[in-house]
Length: 320
Ligand code: ASP
Image (cartoon, rainbow, N blue to C red):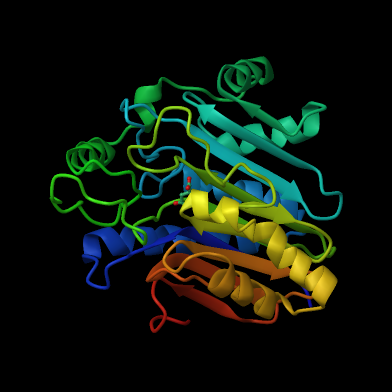
């Protein structure tokens, strides 16, 4: 048993020939965030504190699609969303439609802890952020030149997508929404030295998404879910993850069918959602960790007190 942690930086159609200048900074960030999480767990921080801490770090990194680095809506704006859940109490908090909040995940935690509600969005969420005095900045802070270019190309191709590992290739006039082309969201799950489970997920959503679109990330039971048995953070095509109720289904298979975490997560990823649409990281109350995906890859990392450490993007590479 003991502590365990897993984190992701998005699942999708990640080309195996991803250039080093796009791969290495992301791997370095995953490694650094894993180290931060492990150190916090070793220092007996709660799982809730650890997942928030790690996701804040990932939000602050422009290489991932959350916080700074969030992808843009059809109007060229950012609308960030996040949620967090405590497995023991099932307390949870979620936010959507943020345009100025530096760390959406911390606002989600404040919704959980300081309001009678679970989910605040758009103007109400922004007003709550101001009331709570969390750090806010001008929206332009979140908009990177890469994301302006991605939006331009997605508009030209008339498609909605997440793809920030490579420049989007010019597509024929009206291209279908590519099924496996989503990556970017960040998430973290952990079990602490007291046996408490928690999960946190944060995203900018999809490139060229409609203004007002809400994905799976802030919807408890889909992109984010934790209870006394497991903690799950999913990534991929939000609409598919919502239809498959990914997070809750993993927990339900464990609860009602007695499946192990690994079997439950593998079943949901393989049978629950269309191929090319989902990946997840999860930990269980018994210290199991699993990171399955049905896309070509997922930026991911994990570590356990028992000594297992892994960092990877595709299936065949880098276990350390
Ligand atoms: N699931 C996110 C969304 O659809 C995107 C992602 O995971 O990269 O908003």
